[in-house]
Length: 320
Image (cartoon, rainbow, N blue to C red; front, side):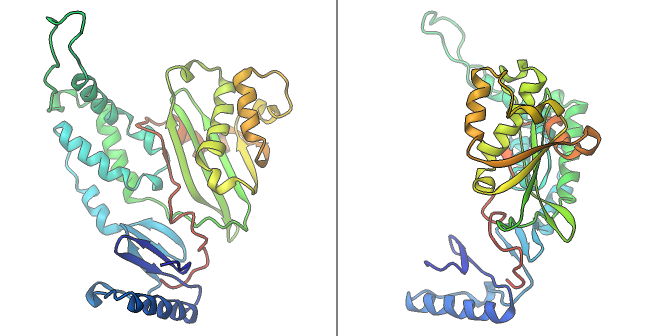
């Protein structure tokens, strides 16, 4: 539609404004454009001049973006998966809202391992050198015999975390960012914050598991990896061109930018970070529990809280 006042996803259109007057002007502009193009709206499916709306399974308001309570009713009452199919369905549903859960990737690791076993079994191939070797094994479906206490804990924690997920603040490019990062032997984690009303509010959560080679890194290199990965690989859209503060519970990491004792990998990471403007500050581990938790809970896959809604410059919008 070439209109900056709207967001469009297929046949879902959301119009927003800072004030009721601005909202009405933008709405009139959108309706005029639809009329010019010969497009009709279903009045029964339309909502006008509301302080918050449900859009693509999310509740969008002036405060930020949150999960849709109606959708999460299904999670709260979800029965324990008995098969690979049921488990995959549960994880796919939860993954849609993973941006609201700190450490989602790590929480779900025990459940993901069951799916990895399925992939391994399905991936067996007949050897070209030994045609008489057994072919692919029949993939197992039932997981009841493999459901451990760790799986049950991950299943329950996912449901509880989703039902009390926080409201993610909109990213405001005019406000400074604060990034908390941490690494452990289980994975990497980070939380991006901005201050609203004197309080730090989460804008995005990011986390991922470690590769086999990364698990052999010394502690200081893991912490450096967490910093580089969060800034360069996951949160670049937010942080590039902005001045921000990075807080870590690894004190030696605060000297990483000035040390000459780096291997080739470290120098590459340092070069990748050279295009960003930030300062490093030490934050004792007792105060770094957010990023620490993201790096230590069980993982499934890499994930991030970044999405089209959270990157919207709309922290002050009042009417949708």
